Image (cartoon, rainbow over all chains, first blue to last red; front, top):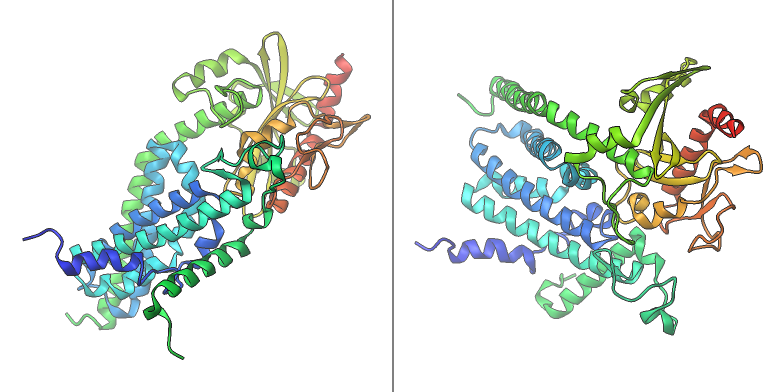
Length: 215
Length: 248
C-alpha cells in the first residue's frame, strides 16, 4: 500500500492553492497582517503553526469519539492552548534564544482561527493519519501566503531580506538607492499586508477562473 | 454511557482539566530550575552587553557572551553591585536578581524601592549600569543602560515581551541600540534622558548632544515607550547620578 493515496495527496495539495485558508477561505487574516513586516517572522510563524496544527489535529482526531459535542469548542481551545504552552516551556528550558523569538507568536497561534477551523471541520470527523495530513496541508497553505507577503513587505518596505540589505544602503545611497529609489515605509504598516493579500487573491483568481464566485 | 448527557459532559470537562492541568503543572515544576537558570544568565548577558562586553562583530546582529562563560565574565567585569534604598546605599552581590517591576510598583504604593546599580570596569573605564522597565505598545519593555560618570551613554540593551515583529520588536536590533551610544542624558544640567524622535533629520545619528535618536518607522508607540522608560529611569536615579558627577 502506498504511503499516500490519491485522496491523501489531495489533502495536502488542495490547501496550497485552490482551497487556500487565507486567499480562498479568508481565515487567519489577523496573524497574517500582524507579523509579515519581515520575512523571518513570517517563516517562524509558518513553522510554529505547522507544528501546532499537525499535532493538534492528531490529538483532536484521537479524541474525536469521546468529546461531548456541547463543549467541543472548549476542548479544542484547551488542546491547542496546552500544546502551545508545552512547546513554549520546553523551548524556554532547552532553547532559550529560540523561545524568546517565539514568545510573541504564542498568543497569535492559540487564537489562529485556521487551527480551530481545521479541528472543527476535519479532525473531529476523520482518522488520525488523514487529520495529520490535513493539518500539515493547511498550515503549509497558510505559511506560503505568509512567506510571500513577508517577502514583498520586507523587500519593498525595508530593502532587506531576512535582515540582509539586498537593494543597497538607503542611508549611504548605494545600489538601487543611488538612482533615487526610496523604501516605501507604508509597506511596513498593516494595511499594506491586506493589500498584498488582496493582490494575491486577484492573481490567483485570474489564473483559475473556477475560483470566481457566481453572483 | 450517553455521550450527550450532562453528566458525561461534566465528567469529561473535569477529567480534561485534571489531565491537562497535571501535565502543565508537572512540566512547569520539572523545568522551572532550568528556566530560572536561563533567565539568570540572560540578565547577566544583558548587563554585560550594555557595558560593551559582548561578541558583536562589525555591524549586524546582537551577540552575547556565550552562556557557558557568562557567569565567570560577569563576576570579572562587574566589580560592584549596589542597591539604592532611599538615601541608603548598600552592596549586594545578588542585586542583579532584583525584580524591577516589583520595585516600581512599590513606588506607586508610596514605599521606597530598592534600585540596583551595577558598576563595571573594562579597559580602565568605569561604567554605571542601571536597569530600565517600561511599557511598549502591547506589553512590557525593559533594558539596561550603561553610563560613564559624565552621563554619556556607553551602551544600551533593550528587550520586549510582545512588540510587533518587524516594527516595535526592532528596538532590540543593533541599528537602533547602537544609536544611543555617545548620546547624553543631560541637557545642560537637567536630566532629560533621550528621546526617540520621529523626523529628527539625523538618521545616521551624527549629532550626539541633542538628546534624540532617530525613531523606527511604524513603531511610534514603542518608541515613545522607550523615551518614557529612559526618562523615568533617569528621574529615579537622578540623585545617585548627581553624586557621581560631583565626585569628579
